[in-house]
Length: 250
Image 1 (tube, rainbow, N blue to C red):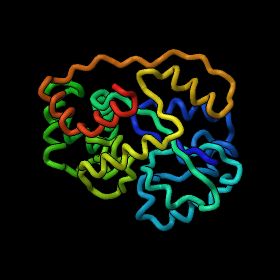
Image 2 (image 1 turned 90 degrees about the vertical axis):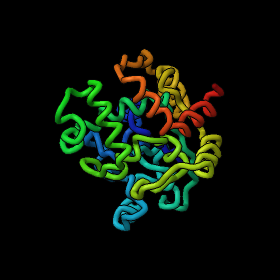
Image 3 (image 1 turned 60 degrees about the horizontal axis):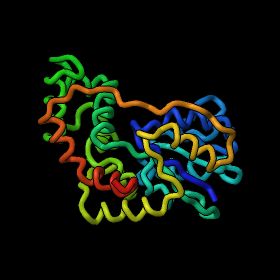
Image 4 (image 1 turned 135 degrees about the vertical axis):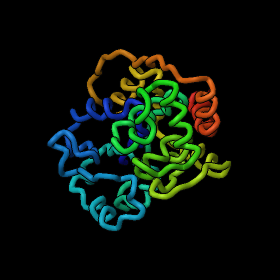
């Protein structure tokens, strides 16, 4: 059986992937292709797998499938139908409080110069004006500066990933999508919690029989987001909040 780590942005996945490189590229397929010994496994923009026939062929041609125990990337669970059919697959992920994840995500994608010019050309990043500009960008369904899979990250992104939504297309989350995400959540071999990161890492290492890696839990950075913006972000992430509660019985 092979386990796929559905790496949801801003949940501590990149750091965990860095730790897991001790498994070596024959046991751990990291589609991002870093560090250098992962280059044979590299598969950029895996989010677009459903519409890219060439990338589908590249996926099944990765040389390490037979020996791999784990594969990882920013994929939706729609990847399942494009994996080599001769193997059995299960999935794991890490979830994070949806409000904090979305706030962190918005600040992160300002690394895109064109997106930054859309919402921060007339203000400082993280100022009140910045957050009101971000709200307008989302409400207007602005397509400037970000790719489609990035624009999905503003609302119910965790639900979309677990439901197997095609991230190359626009979509809305409804009750049917949520129920599919909930079903897939219950089938996962492991669901980590960003707010309990040290224990999450420990459990992942135990899952793969790796030597212990003592570390401290991550702490949330204080954010200065206007209350109106917080309420807006909560509203457009209502299914993610439900999924988060389902995962941890909160």
